[in-house]
Amino acid sequence: MNRFSIALFGILGFCSYCLQGQNALLAPISPRSNAMGKTALNFTDLHSLFGNQAGLANLETFGVMGMVEQRYLLADLNHAAFGAALPTFSGVFGLTLRNFGTGDYRETGAGLAYARKLSDRLRIGGQLNWSQISISEYGNRSLFNVDFGIQAELLPKLWAAAQVRNAIRQQLLDGEYTPTVFSAGLSYAVGDKVMLYTELYKDIDFPADMRIGIEYNPSKAIYLRAGVNTAPGGWSFGFGLPVFQNLVFDCAAAYHPYLGFTPSAGLAFRKKK
Image 1 (cartoon, rainbow, N blue to C red):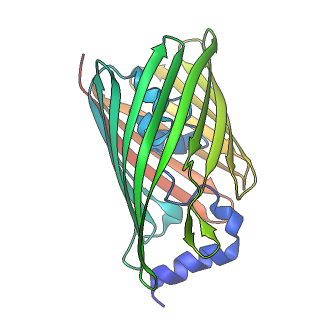
Image 2 (cartoon, rainbow, N blue to C red):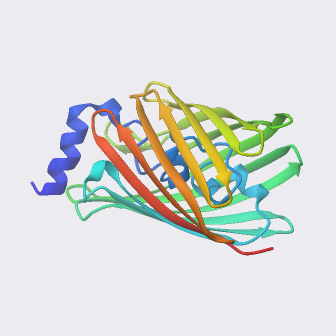
Image 3 (cartoon, helix red, strand yellow):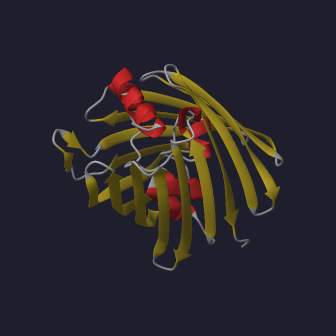
């Protein structure tokens, strides 16, 4: 058994619930989300490509982003992803590509997203996902699935959001199924510089996870972020640096109480208006 297999099955054998939300069949977590306790439902920027697709409806110009993460600082648990979003007169279209793992276990995937504003206070979105799982001892398995999301303004500066990921439950191996997740959350703007996020995340096979995040924008030069989550418990922090007027560098580190740190980083580019 090679080094990757030892690492992967060692983690699985240690405590299966520790991997809640870590299955790569779910969209990878963007550096912005990773820094804020994995909250993402109420994002309204390019990071919505890997959070709640409904947030893409707020985009007004073309944008692309790329990101990488190294789970638990293990070289064989790398996750890389690319995304692009294009606003049109009939809504916003998005594309995501991702890759996770190495030769013995690899997941690749692609997604086609669509989002639309129904009004200034209501946005909807969804995504068609294709995934392929390659396991050296079992061969390949390809499957399609769908995500749905919504964002709605309840009060001035207070937004609610909900999403279902992998809405169609499918069997991968005997007793193993695609992770279907339901989540809901709120965001609130405290003045012009602070955003608060809270979410409840429920994989149907695992305990619910409460997530809390904060983003502080003291100046145009930096965004400071931090967050916590409850199942199994952990904390995170990070920052965003606008390199130019239309380019932002994001970096984050999330700490898992049993498995250690997961660093992530990415670049997001949006065309000027």
